[in-house]
Length: 181
Image 1 (cartoon, rainbow, N blue to C red):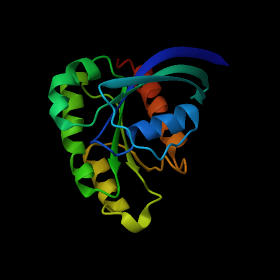
Image 2: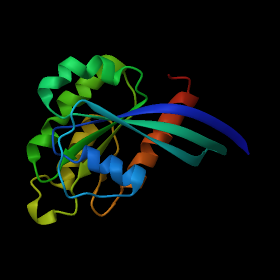
Image 3: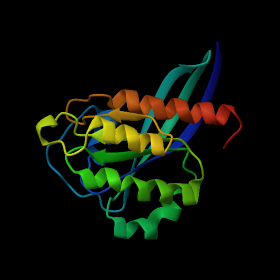
Image 4: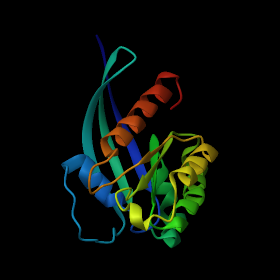
């Protein structure tokens, strides 16, 4: 079987307190912490992902960039943060409807700098069903608007976290195999 190794930069975007850092910790370390700490600046984590893509064994060194969610910093940091990105995970919080609406601005900020790279939407906190302000249908409509797949995720339970990160890895490889960089 053929082998393919690559490095990729995946950026997480979304408003404050949607669970971006918790999703990264769950994916990279398989840990969930109830304590909320605001991300200051950017934190970069690394995970090596191995998977099969159309008969090719892929080894991806995924650099996962977690940025602060304050929209006031979006315009200040977006050029350096999104430059060279290969994929985006746009995160909203199902218990706060406005965070889903804000994904339009985040997606536009990404496209302004990085072009048409793959975007996947994570609708996080799916485990808090009794507090949801956003339905799966709302998320599906937003995802369709951005031609993006979506996952209902929970950093706490791990629901769809690995599947979502695997999907962005596969989308990156698929795009690069078509010659889009």
